Amino acid sequence: MIRLLLFIVALMFVVRAEPIATVDASAPQEHRKLIALSFDDVPRMRGAFLTPQERGERLIAVLKEKQVDQAAFFLNPGQLTEYGDTKGATQRIKDYVAAGHVLANHSFTHPRLANISAADYLSNIDAAEIWLSRQPGHRPWFRYPFLNEGGKDMAKRDVIRAGLKARGLLNAYVTVDGSDWNMEDQALRAVKAGKKIDMDALRALYVETHVQSADFTDAMMVRTLGRSPAHMLLLHETDMAALFLGDLIDALRKDGWEIISADGAFADPIYRMAPETPYAAGTLAEALAWEKGITGPRWYERNNTRIANALFAERVLHEKVP
Ligand SMILES: [Zn+2]
Image (cartoon, rainbow, N blue to C red; front, side, top):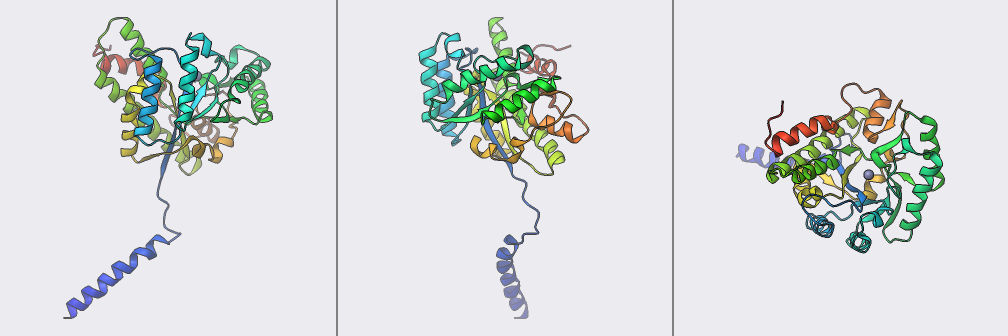
């Protein structure tokens, strides 16, 4: 009888303990891993496997299927005529917006800041903004081509930073990069060379690389900021994305990541920071870690194309790598 009473009392305690625990503000915060998706170089040149039309349709379909409500597409409107597909590309861009996604500025013709004057660079941004500002779904965000913010030239970096500010444009940094453009390039080269591609291995490499990069970056940001920020993943409008994005989203979620909107990610105050480092290029995460003096690698190793290409040859082409 006493045992039964004790049991009931214990049961009451367990039941009552539940709500008390959830309102305990001193409890450590759960580590939420948040990430948004962005696609650069729209419209991008044709890849190895799909037509640009098929690529765009698949991208929209997979984002919808995986319930990613809003991704950001960074455009180079000057390329609309470059790839001789003005009508199709313009329609695809409209389709992205109709599906709930947003458009932003990646310059008019994708110049590298190191190669042109600050004035010409800003004019190039303006030309893209004129085109973009007429589009629904437009956001006042600018992403640097090649993630190059001026390299060693700090005066130039500051002119462009000030120019963006004067125009009300956010520096739409990325935090997570897996150099997907290079994997796309490797696949294109292999197909042109008549090599056999192991598509399952390519899918696995694409997914693994981006999940690894996200986790590497998040750990580095926790050391740098003392918290996990809202991350921004850099992808490109590639065949790889159209073919493997669904698997990547599944893998990220399985790894504890929550996919959030681009609007949601850029609301994080880290995207208003202007890191001061001896060289201005790359991801915001690398720059912030560098500025803070974080030791150890600040650069996800597969962004080194030598390492990435050896992995591609070995795992996707089954070639012997010396
Ligand atoms: Zn680009």
